[in-house]
Length: 364
Image 1 (cartoon, one colour):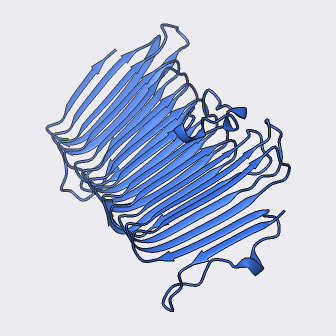
Image 2 (tube, rainbow, N blue to C red):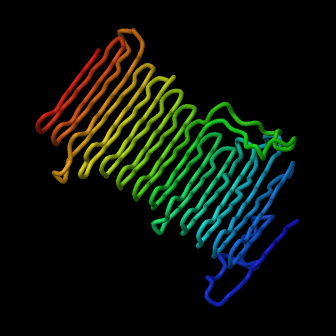
Image 3 (cartoon, rainbow, N blue to C red):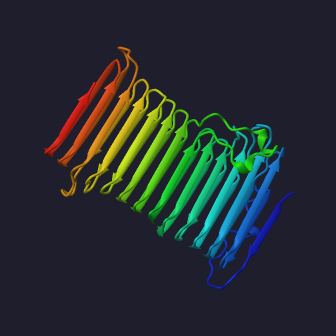
C-alpha cells in the first residue's frame, strides 16, 4: 500500500515544495513531506518496513524560523535478503538554532542504496546522519558562514560515501565509518541485521571553510579513503584509520593550522598532508605502524609571509629486509623544523628544506 503525508504551514513568500502528491515517483511506497514556518517547531517522520519486499520510502522536511528540529527515520530489515530499497531523505532548514537528524537502516548487500541530505543555512546548527548497510550516501551542507555548527555523519558497511561542506566560524565536523549500533536501534527488530565488525571500501570527503574549524575522521577497516580540505585560520584536523590499505589526505590552505593523520594496526597505508598559502606556525604529524607505510608532508610559503612550521613523521614497520617504509618532507620559508623517526627492515627518508634557519632531524 502506498502512503502519502503532507503537512504545511504556508505563506506567500515561502518556496514551493520540492514535490507534491501528484509528482511523487511511483517507485516509492511511502512518501512524506513536511513544511513548517515559524519558531519552536518539530517534525518527525518515521518510515519503517519489516520483512517486506521491494519497499521504498521518500521523506522531505523544510523549516524556516527559530529553534526548529527535524528527524527522519527510515528502516528496511528483511533478514539480510538483498532487494531494492532506495530510501531517500532530505532536510532543509533556514533558521537559527536548528537540529536535523536522518537515520537509515537496511540490510547489507541490498541492490540499491539509501540517500540522506541535510542543508542548513543557520547559526548554531546541528546535523546528524546515521546509515547502516552498503552503498549508502550521506551529504551535509552547512553554509552562509554559520556560527558554531556541528556536523556528524556515521556509516557502517561496504562502499559507503560521506560528503560534508561546512562554511563557518568555530564549526565542528565528526565523521565515523566503522562498526556501530545506535542507542535507538537496539530493539529486537533492528537486531535482525547486526552491524559488521568494520567498514570496507568507504570514502569520506570534508571541505571546511572559515575560522577555528575542527574536523575529526575515523575509519575502521580496509580500502578506505579520507580526504579533508580546509581553508581558513586555526584549523584542527585529525584522521585515524585502522587496518590496511587505507589512504588519507589533508589539504590546508591557511595559517596556524594543525593536521594529524594516524594509521595504526594495519599494513600498506598511505598518508599525505599539504599545507600551503601563507603557512605560518602550522603543524603536521603523520604516525603509521605496519608494513609498507608511506608518508608525505609538504609545507609551502607560497605568499612569502610564512614560516616556523613543524613536520613530524613517525613510522614503525617490521624488521624484514623486504619491508620498506618511506617518508618525504618538503618545506620552504624560514625557521621550519622537520623530524623523522623510522623503525623497519628498510627505511627511506627524504627531507628537502628551502630557505633559511631550518632544522632537520632523522632517526632510523
